Image (tube, rainbow, N blue to C red; front, top):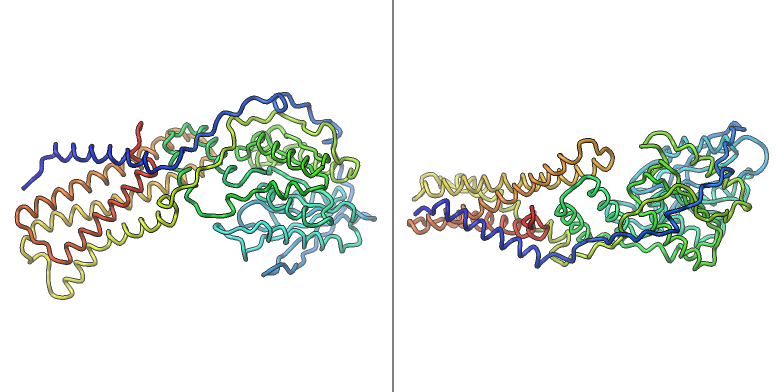
Length: 497
């Protein structure tokens, strides 16, 4: 008994609409950050005083020394660069941003500072206790304090001017260290988010997708995935540590940085420092600087290193320079909103379980057929072999479509990440990628419906599946059904397209 194509198309359409409704019902509250009201405080910032970024000529040769520092759980390699000019000098520890890395990424800055009278230490980031899933900012702060101890033991270091410099993720690490130890005499924060990691990433993602003209559904998919990530460090609150920082603070932001909610970060920082009774903060917005204080990933903007060195060398006189906020106008269009937490069925554990069950289903057909053949029972000779042969072809197509959909979704996310660096030709690629993911999902639904229809028709015509065939069908159809429900949760059936 054959079911007509019109009936199948109508059935698939009804199921697609039902899945869209299921997606709306199951989904958490949408991530929809509100526009940020215009603030006069940030709309008309005074220019940065020229004296702060005055050029500093290179005055000294410097030495380079590599040392090993015992930290908790491992030994860290550190490189000290120190001017050879006589006397004691201010000193600074570089604290890295997110990801693994070595101290060599700070070589150009450290050399420049050493030639102008500042001792610095750059060290390789720990590998024990730091991973993609688990990050202990307190442990990283302990590493930074061990480097402070290393500097303060040197006879060429001015003990009244030993401080920490932290970039990006280092903005959550450095305040913890500064709150723990009075040996940290000053703090430099570069591109420091100050809001929680999840809020910062969600804000940056929203801005990125708006620049790429990505469909709203793409943002919903990515933010729902973020809400289901069970990484505790993503909800780290940096305010308690910032509220205990009493040392002078220099915070630098680049106006071309797509990763930082400038206004929210600044307001969080200033309110926390005021709560600590600390008025010694200087916040500067550097025109044209990106997240690393460079021009489009190339050279440093001209006023970054002079501003940094003049402030450090001028301490304590430069603490709390007036005006407290100055520089180019920062732009933040939307609030730095939190991502709604996903329900249990939207978490990564359930997602991976679904993918694994679907994968088991997809490999069941060839495995069971191989087992039967090894036992001497060729499926091709079984009764009603023609019915099973057609169903088996449908199963194989479903498996390839399911794998293709998962691969396309992964490729789409990768595409978004790559375009965060280079947005040339971004709009057509993002639109096309999103369309491919959704079309493959709809195709997988159509194949599920048509396979079920074929099974029903074969059963009505007298087909009697073997135990192995029944198991294969249950695994494949069940696994695909779970994938379709997961796709519905992530909005792949939502309207409009």
